Every structure is written in C-alpha cells, then in structure tokens.
Amino acid sequence: MSRTGEAFKNRKAFIPFVTCGDPDLETTMKVVKAAVEAGADLIELGIPFSDPTAEGPVIQAASLRALQGGVTTDAIFDMVVKLRESVSIPMVFMTYANVVYSYGAERFMSRCNKAGIDGIILPDLPYEEKGEFQDVCRAHDVDLISLIAPTSQDRIAMIAKEAEGFIHIVSSLGVTGVRSRITTDLNSMVEEIRKNSDLPCAVGFGISTPEQAKEMAALSDGAIVGSAIVKIIGEYGKEAAPHVGEYVSSMRKALDEL
Image (cartoon, rainbow, N blue to C red; front, side, top):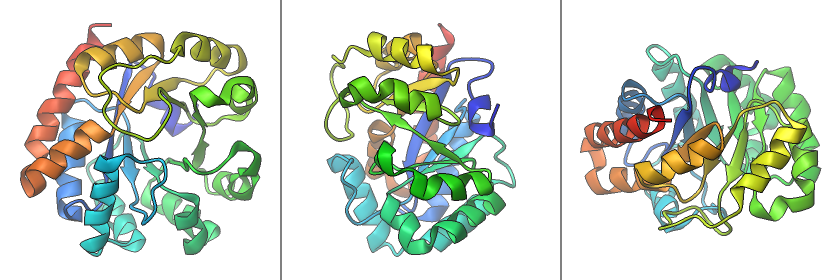
C-alpha cells in the first residue's frame, strides 16, 4: 500500500484542502498543523495557478490572493520541508499540469520526493494524456492520483484499473464550491470503482457540513473538503488556524460515528 493509501487504513479518512500561500505561507503551515491535530488523515495542498479551470469562486479568489502575495512553487516546497518536521500524515499536491510542466516534471517530482509529498492530483490532466507524467511520478515515488467524475461513465473502469494511491471521486458536475445537496448517483460510481480497483476512494467537491461528509464517507472511504475550509481562511485570514481546527474536529466527529 502506498503512503497515500495508508490514510484510509484505520478509519474513514477526512481530507482537507488548503490553498498554499493564502493569505501567506506561515498561515498555511498553522492551518495544516491545526487540521492534523484535529484529526485530518491526509492533506491536499493546492499550488495556486493563474487560471484554475476546475475551481469555483472561493478557491479562485484564494489562488489570486496567494499569487498577489508573491507565493512561488519553490517557496511552497520549502514550506513542505518545514511542515514535515512535525507532520507525519500523507500530503499531496493539487495543481494544474501547466504548473508542473513549466517547472519541469522531472525537477518537480524529484523535489516532491525530497520534500515529503506523497502524491499529486492534476484536475486538468485527461486520462488519455497521463502517460506524460506517469513515468516521472513513478520514478520519484509520487502517486499520480486519478479523479473520477460523474461524466467519466464508461471510462470509470478504465481509470480505476490504473489508479494509484487513492481515487478522488468528484461528486458533482461543474467547478468546486459548497453545494446545499449532492444529487449524483454516487452509489453506482463507487460500485463500478470497487469492481475494478482495491484502492480506497474518497468523495470531494461540494461537501461543507458534517452531515454531508458523513453521508459521502458512508458511501466511500472518506470525505474531501476544500471550498468550505478555504472560505474560513478567507474570512479569518492570519487568525484562521483555530477556526479551521474547530471545523475539522466537527467533521472528524461526524465520520467517527460511522
């Protein structure tokens, strides 16, 4: 089992997403540590990108704030190295293919390995083009984590068979963001994934309440929350860490009831 898969070993995994550098990297570090202390099992770290096509307004605004604040990929790698002094749970990057491509895929994955990043999610990388990054990820022991969306339909089996680490299920069509309810037939998606892969799968996009997290984790192996957390950080800025900790704690509690 890979490091990212280990996050699901003992319980339903709670996975928070944080945009690195919003409002600054020091706050990102505090937020990550607070989330870990509150019971997060894996952290998704977003590397800001100027054209985040999969993101809704909340994460887009966070990316913009981070970029305007001068955050760089190099500075994010340095932050991860510091985080690894006290954070032992798996951490993965979520960013866009262009960020990796312009940095140089070989150099990027090599730095991931050295810094202690266990996997990467590239929402704009189609399954058919993943070969471009697959070999270099494997060479540096970085899981290339697959997304499966409601539109994947007849491609679910194909994607699941070749997935690594864990499978990130996209609960809803459209961009990231808080939704009042999630109407996708996730049961049949999970069923199809289970038929073709032994990897754990977690549901993300649209989850904001403990009730939703519990519902999604009951169907799968965990819940991923991004926009609701990024919103808290947007609201409290440099003072966000305890508020994020409190929120993660409420999610952890809901998942532990399963």
